[in-house]
Image (cartoon, rainbow, N blue to C red; front, side, top):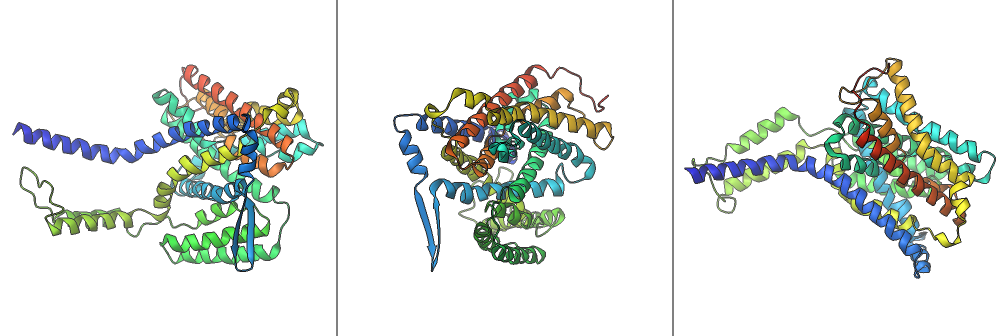
Length: 455
């Protein structure tokens, strides 16, 4: 009896672990991806400043050609990453945005005002600081660089702090970072498109119409959306708009409804579970011996598939690939800066460097905290019970970790390699300062009593 009880307890522990595993895995993914991203950044800087520095640039500038019939697309390896693979990053971001709008922190006006207001402030104030230093100069086109927040790095810092940081601040940071991403995509699409080819935009509009029809008709096959997504990516690439915008657009049309609701799921699974009639000491391993048990298990698997929405399934499937392959590869291809040819003064004190660094380090926390304060004072938003204004300031400072999106916008802003390298150094400098400062503020400054009001 004692042995049987221990077996039942172990089975119960395994079930509990399996239920909690997806949530634990998600948290670990965010921290692990930020560590990998940091490692790729260091590797890129070492490679670009080693005796093999020339191989770094030659490798990523290698031309790759894609031809079909009489049509051909020729891009460097770096461009294929920035315009091709990064479309999957923006697609995943789009899925996160849609989920937050439907059921998350952006689902209602009352809940959305705080993170959306913070995101607006976190974009506007850094841009104004950048323009203060660069207005009238050739570098003024880079005003969108300090507007972005890198959600992987910022959540990675929060993960380091563990339970010292309340869940409310993680939710707030995630929500305003997602709203920030949406704003950044809008800025890229509208302000960083140099030339428009109307005929390809019309083709894109037709493809978007087919996506809308597929969504309206409740088409759940990922293959249909994949084909339409590839066609949309090609047409937007040819139109002159940055092709990664296609990722966001396709994500908006991925169905967010399951085949049946929770009641139907429970009914189906309960019916399948009736096939398992086990003795008191358990069934043991019967899946290879009992055909009814195997059929029931497969029916439960299909029920789980139909219960999970295509949006959730794609987000869950793509997140590890984006976090552990695409973003680190993007960093490896774009962060490498040859420091020997740069002037130290230009790297730190040029208008470009000051605009980016101060925009991230000062503009981000000031804009996020100020606009969050305004929304609370106006009574249109409120702080969660477990967070205080010190938490908001700390999260605002972490918002200054621009990195991925800032590097992306800088590559769209400048063609001159020397100016682009200076921008990259400023992004790294501002992101590092923001990360360390935010970590210290949240680690040692969380003793203030939480409160809802701003007064």
